Image (cartoon, rainbow, N blue to C red):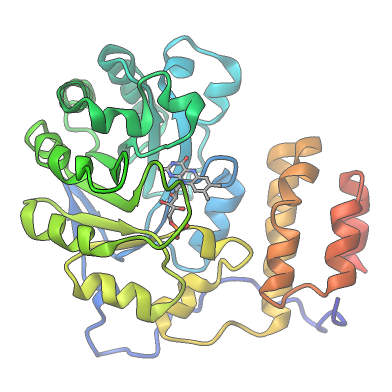
Length: 338
Ligand SMILES: Cc1cc2nc3c(=O)[nH]c(=O)nc-3n(C[C@H](O)[C@H](O)[C@H](O)COP(=O)(O)O)c2cc1C
């Protein structure tokens, strides 16, 4: 690691944007239902990634809205202790979306009401997850193949939250190439009360391979009377701007923000990555937050990030390798404090 700076900078985006006075498409206010947002760049929900510490990290760099990872509605409904842990959020975390997955309207409705009690500013329903263990239960992307049930779920959840939070839905373009299930289902979800639709325009069968086809995002944005949020392949300002210009109401970062939370600031401020000292301060701050939140489990969780920090040029190869091998939190701390 580079020698520590004499004064450790406080990580995060500076509040002054370079284009002060010039209207910036990312700073146009956006309403999702009654929820007013001041920025159109969000962090997407990611299972196993979007913990409280992670959400705080991307918020420091400018994320206008973050999401929990997808939470099992059954787990919430039946008060599974581990699932209830996912409902924990901080007072500094708003606005925050909670994402639920499930296939039963009553169970999802009850879980959504609990999310609102736990602090959700928005409840998102996952109709996008392509993973076998989710789809085989009728949840996630499987709901795109059952539009009637999908719409009934939205209606039940909207009824349960009683206007306390907007209900949104995250979809894929379809189950398989050419079926257009996303585009055909979305209007029914909106008619049932969805306040926005987020689309990741890959098919479920594609998983995360290939390119996202945002011509589908633009077609949906032209058709639907609610905001359409775009997710997929956003790696910088040009890609994000192109999505807003094509009609998306907001853009979500996902894989490209892993190990690179300052990508939010790069996009919002049309800026370069911050200096190494600031990036290292962010790595240490994030690591501390993760350790406080996850204790012994943090070592495994953090292993997802070390190679990404290395790829983004923030950690050198030797340090990233040593961190991967570090057996416990003490070893991780010692390596980062060197
Ligand atoms: C590891 C991983 C976990 C994800 N978990 C979720 C999730 O819990 N809920 C969800 O709606 N999407 C999830 N996604 C999809 C992302 O939110 C996003 O839509 C997708 O990665 C496309 O964006 P990208 O090409 O910028 O990565 C996940 C993606 C990855 C790679």
